[in-house]
Amino acid sequence: MSKVRVLLCATALSGAIVGTLSSAFAQEERNDQLARTVVSTSATIKPGDVVVISGGRHTIPLMEAVAIEAQKAGGMVTMFLTTDRVVRSFNADVPEKYLDQAPRFLAEWLKHVDVFIGLPNVEDPQASIAGVPEARFAKAAKAGEVVSNILNASPVRGVFIGYPSSQEAAANRLDFATYEKMHWDGIAADYNQISEKGKTLRNALKGAKSVRITSPNGTDFTFSVGNRPIFVDDGIITPEKAKSKLIFVRTVTLPTGQVFFAPIETSANGKVVVPKNQCRYAPLTETSFEFKNGKMENFKAKDGLDCFNETMTPYSGPKDILGFVSIGLNPALKVIEDGGDYRPGNAAGMVWIGTGQNELYGGNNKPPGGFGFPIVKSTVQVDGKTVVKDGELTL
Image (cartoon, rainbow, N blue to C red; front, side, top):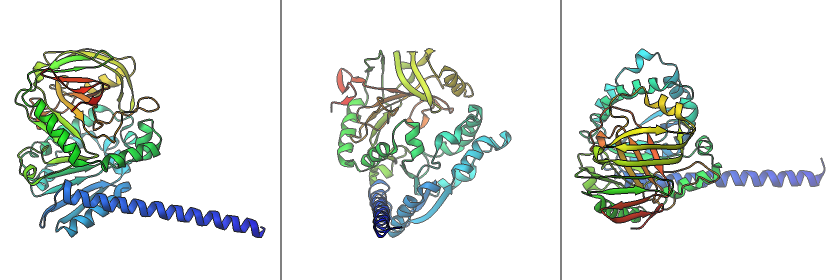
């Protein structure tokens, strides 16, 4: 090899090493900064708090950063770790008779946990559920009610942190660079600004007699809010929020930014049209149905109808009754349908509705089950006042 070629190879190798180290340092700095935000703002960890941090193998660097920062704040930290392989095995391989085992031990532990910080357990969520019958998930969900039943009475403050993966990006039909940048930009958004918009929207919705949601695709239905609580996820758990008897007042997600609530179920009437959605990561297209006194009727879909029916069938109870409505607040998150299949619920102005379980939202639908639907470019009117116009917040 000539001296020139040796020099060029050495230069290229040096550049690659510097680039890799620079990326690693940037990631470490980002994790450290996020960890400080989680501990001081989102979770408000105090000396003596019992802190549990849960996640998957791919999230270990961020878990470590949060654990270290929590310890510095006086938290007593335990880490729960799982892997894609273990989760997949539970979903697909565990004998069905064991899916009914209620995790009572976890319900007992949570009575003594002050802060639960959850990161994604799997790097490839699509692979973790592929080919698994919905009946298995229904059994596990039923057994898991022993945990959800005690959450309001527990002292837990919850922080759930998203962690982007190339597999998730592919599932949303986005290139990883675009997906990852938007995710971290969403986490770095101004929480105080989001909080102010959330409070304004909550005040508009509180006690509303008539909320109307329309869209250019044909959605047009109404419902009332009544005396149901309106939750604001703004990334901040204040001391006042930490004392609430409702778990979702004490819980935030990152990226943050969402107002959500359980409407009066039987008040919903009108039509819903959703051109694009997903069912178990497969396309669910040209969906339409009506709400009649809160109940979903005349459901149709061009693609994915079998998947929808198979997903709903194993569940009993009010799985087809209006369960929740959410409106996004985060300006850094965007809906991408041209060149992607991405409709994040926290994106500013993005509306999702869902059927089924809503007990922890203050609703009457108790057993597990239900389905969510994105209403893109929607307009939301609250007692005649427009709060969302063509998918944009007007507050």
